[in-house]
Length: 432
Image (cartoon, rainbow, N blue to C red; front, side, top):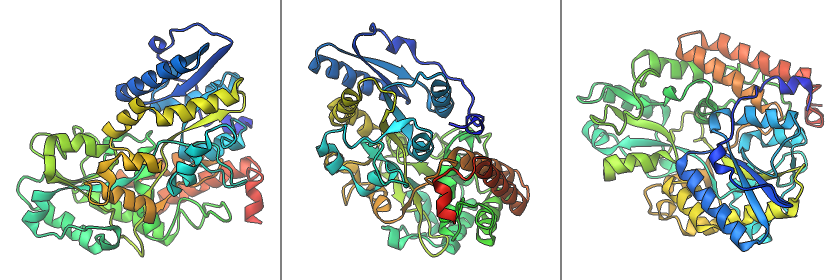
């Protein structure tokens, strides 16, 4: 890992010491992961079951909150203290593989797991240079448009049933306008700006709008951002989002969280991740409906890529690490935690256990998007710089700054990062 690449991350998070309660043994397996209490409980239960099934093995769990996860990985890599098994956010996979942190997972994991992976799971887990799998996971991810059905019915809005039936840009903006005039609606849509500019949410949630309108965060053939991120199509996308905010249609970042389903239901729509359904349905019941993301340009685009599992190159027991990942993905407690989070299936066997995502299930649109409209974030080692630059641009756009200026600055920052790393060979070969 070059000196430059290390500078975009700062050491920060500490592990949850309560999870590290066993002594280091000859077959001690260190497993690093993130997530809330529900995930912790599921992974703890799986780890205990793995120890019981594999005599003499101790699983040491290292928990780091998602908010500081990339920084923690960089810190551990710098101190040569990586775990054996590492959970990672899919868009960072290319950076980690390029930096020499991960090894191909296919030789280490039960072939039945590999055969069980959905196409979107394969996509999020593959390194584009050699086409090999460096990770796998139980689930993938998507963003859908959650709607309060009673509000849509009040304004006479049609309810799309599939990706092919998604609202157009004109329809969507008219609906936002109509909702803004509806009694009881304080804001037509929650884009979860309260997630904060440091969150990966910004790139994950909003880049599909840009891609739907015919542009991208970077040219994926030349790996140059100038001329793409600051193109007319991207400026139009940024200006459109800014216009929503300026008209008061968007829940401000200072508002209380989850106004979509909180008392009063002050937001009519919510641009939310797959896990949001589990929260909303407990408050709203059948009144919450999951719709496809709008078709802002020639096609619907939705995001994919979420938390997946890899084996580090420094793993002392690589075969054992792979065995643990396979065990975890099949573990009933871990699967139950994922179901409670309304996770989009990334294994076909998990889809069979997930009624939410079956063809007539309330989140069926999430699975359809995974199959029809999903576009991964750029699989490039410079992704940390790409996402930081885009997030900074979106901060400025929401604050009222000129979209063209903000996106031009972002494109320049991305290109400088790539230039400072000599094009990240062999990725630079793609641009020649």
